[in-house]
Each structure stands twice: as structure tokens, then as C-alpha cells.
Length: 128
Image 1 (cartoon, one colour):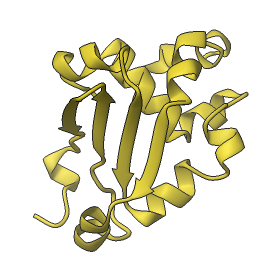
Image 2 (tube, helix red, strand yellow):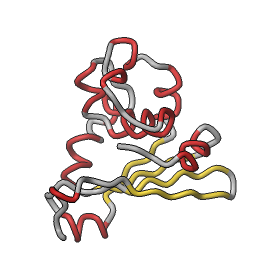
Image 3 (cartoon, helix red, strand yellow):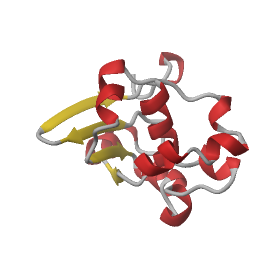
């Protein structure tokens, strides 16, 4: 997951960050909320949309360095993860259903709103 610098720049000033995904992803990486918004282990962080989205926003990518004991405890990631709101996006659900799907990320800071959609490799993109 890689975000453009413009989106990453706004994230530190964010009042709210919304993430739209399909239902399958929501159930896998957004529930239960007490674990997904505050992962305590490496595996919990690996399966946490709030953690991985914020790591990508702050560092412009997600890598193995995020999934270490120290990475999972990063205060800046955990603080910003508290501002993440995840929801099933009806358009993504309709178009992607149970397939590997993109996520739409919106960063809201004051009156400004910046949007980016994550991308997946074309080789696994479905529908075409």
C-alpha cells in the first residue's frame, strides 16, 4: 500500500480518516475493533486496516519494519489510527464483492478533503 505524498502530508493534520472497503475485508481486518484499532502483536497489526493505512500514510509505504515489536508499538501510528473510520463501501462491495479489492481512503482536515484509492497489481485485478 503506497500513498501519494500529498495525501500523506495531510494525514498528520487529520480530524478524521475514512476507509471504504468491501464486506469481506471489513470483517477480516476491522473486527473486532478493540484489536484492530490497538494491535498488541505483530499478527494483529498485519491484519489491521487502521494500523496499515496509517503506517502507509505516515511513511508512504508499509514494509516489514512496521511489523516488528517496536513497529507495532509506534505511538504516532496508534494515535492516528484512533482517527480511522472503516465502513463497507457499497460501490466497492458491488464491484468487487469477495475478491481482493481496492480501498478508498479519505483524509479530512478542517474543510479540506483529500482522497486516494489504493491500487492492486493488474495481474490480480478483477473485474477487469
